[in-house]
Amino acid sequence: MSFEHLYAFLAALGQNNSKDWMDSNRKQYHRVRDFYIAWLDAMNQELAAIDPDYFDTPGKKAINRINNNLMFQPSRPVYKNHFGAGLDQISKQGDFYIHIGEKENFIGGGYWHPSPKVLKSIREAIDYNGQELTAILNKKSFKNTFGGLIARGVPEKCSQRDTRRIISI
Image (cartoon, rainbow, N blue to C red; front, top):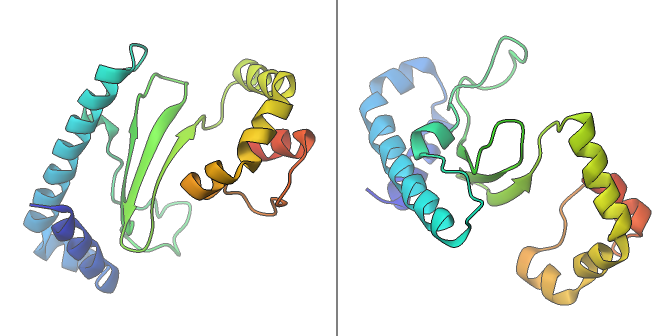
């Protein structure tokens, strides 16, 4: 099993996104899913080895469901077109998110709906170190390596106030 198999499965799913197709290909789905979980387990061990504050998150706990929640968004396809996972998952805190899809792949990190207290501390840290953060985000080496901060409507040169607004979205 390899990432080539994972991408091939996602491509086929993209062409046949239905319960009938998934039922007929469930064994293949489980093989690809098990490969991805094993890869996440290895990544989990690597992160734990380099970061003493890392919270151990086994692949089975990290991986997201492939089913879309159709109750609240019935127009979505039955299944997601990607595999997603969150590592370093301490309850109500940030994590690393890994997204592997047929058409897009990315790694992100941060907080999803932090508590008001945590959000306030994040904003205060940005305000306190805003110029330093803005300088990092605007560095050519940062943009060449990471492609810059990805958010809609972000100006090429963003001010400290803009940076705080973007990060608080």
